[in-house]
Image (cartoon, rainbow, N blue to C red; front, side, top):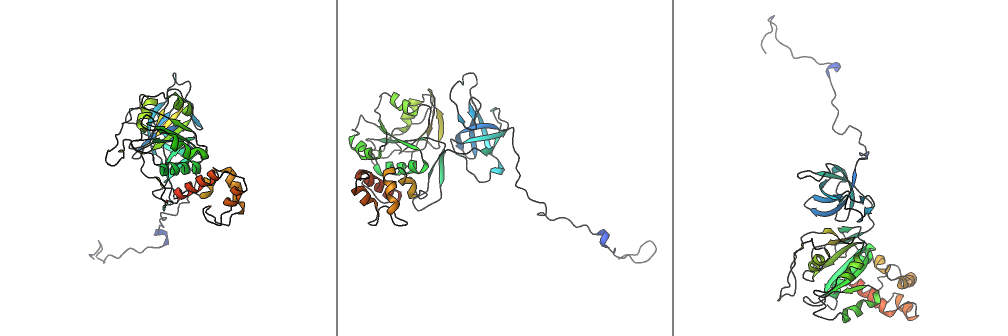
Length: 353
């Protein structure tokens, strides 16, 4: 070191306790679970999801508890684009969800609101990647009716897929409805007879036919439409909602399958009231998340007879007490056969389709 002004060598500064400042660590601030109340949030209804952006309807009868489709001419709902707020974490948002939004909810171009709350759901239609995967993948929220659309020909019906969709409906506590299309190509009798023991309501639709019976079933309800590609689902949607403009697919003559024409679920308002949620065509529907008791609940007469079943009974083995229950006349044998067919479908076992 060089000398100071007086010629003496410079010394390092000597520090004492008063010179030391303890800087708090990053995690020393008390954490809190308190979140903003967002009392100014407005209710919204999710009608479409696309790569982290959610199209929500705001106003015009949209509330925290539902969507009123009446009296909107003076106050039509407006579409608002939103993103998920950070405080929601990884909680998923799907079509049909009732949510609360903050930020710019004007719906003007290039504006973005935030979804800060998801209201309690009345139902959730789920699927898994396959039957061995117990991870639930939510599809649609708050639907009260699952419309299973299947063609009677071109492509031919696939009863096993219908069975699996029925299991999903029973698991989610959503009322099922069979919608049999292309009745101008084949008769519905055999398929109707297969599901008659389950008491599942059905409708038969033909090309160019009257859709009023379908409209009556959908009136003022939130219905989700599910079916294979090529079964006429998009044609049905376009007939029910003329402004929908859903693309229509054609069935491959070699494979007997249609191609996917809808890439994501979308909620569409029916002119007479109610909503339908059109979903992409499916080729598989995993049920790894489904609990046996939820399927059994759809068969009250049989559920009562399971009290004598051994613990962990699959209701498909020789130890099951349901055979004796049916033999004693407490339930219909065809119902037991239907239950076991559905449980076999749930477990991914092959069927006759």
